[in-house]
Length: 413
Image (cartoon, rainbow, N blue to C red):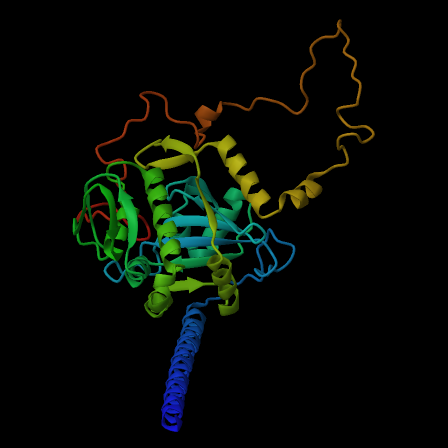
């Protein structure tokens, strides 16, 4: 009996020892895992800080001219202008590159939503830097991000709080860093790569995963459609990158992602401000895409995208509402004649003398010559309606032509 009790006691002791060893092994494993995560997180934090700090450039503004105060993305609804430039080593156009992609994103912190507006590169608008009306893509060639910001603010009447400028290589490297993205290619086409090698990329229609070079070709081609459809593809790529970059599977790709962005980006955001947006995005974003509506306009040899004014006004109001600026704008414009107020237009009585002659409206007169005679830039030339030439986008910078005409910045028309 004593012997059996001793054997049972030894078995229990062994089980307890095994249990202790199992618990100890588990604790060690969990501890190492936590150390690895914390260590990797700290490493990424330091690397991201260095990358963003190295990419920071002062645009000379403490705030937008359309703001009464400096914004804080932790508490304010803010906007970011995304500028993609047609710059690479092959072209050597760092000082005169045009904006190939323009997107204005407004962030509403309360409902975790983003309004993403694509601005076609050929949009015909006023450029404050030059004091002329031209394609919006030329604003960057004239004065970099600052001139582009001023042009977008003038166009949309929306404060641009931050900007991020990236080149072709950032686009390619970011997509490669997250393992590619899924897109729906609308048709078969061939396109130049990031170094302008003609027809280096060949894609077929259908849903597929594309790498960086293929994503760039997908985003910038417009051989078989137009600038508006290209803008939609660019937003599809941006959404694809955002979804993939914030997924759990991309966590251990952040090292490459930070390197890709840091080497090819400039921004007026500090590291802490950028971290606020990253935190904002990790909770899941509701991104709503929009494009500035308009129509083809070709008064001469140059092609433009002429904006639809009523649609433009709707877009302005949508963005103001999303930034919650509408109330402040309304207060500024309020002249005291609100509904229900004494002397409001709705309550004023008017008397019309039926025998009186029709009055001549004050302040109206006809100048010599009509707008057509004076050459209004928005008035199309008389004659045959606009017809697309064989390639209506002759100025496309991605088509290498050995004898093509170039503008004053050395870029082809």
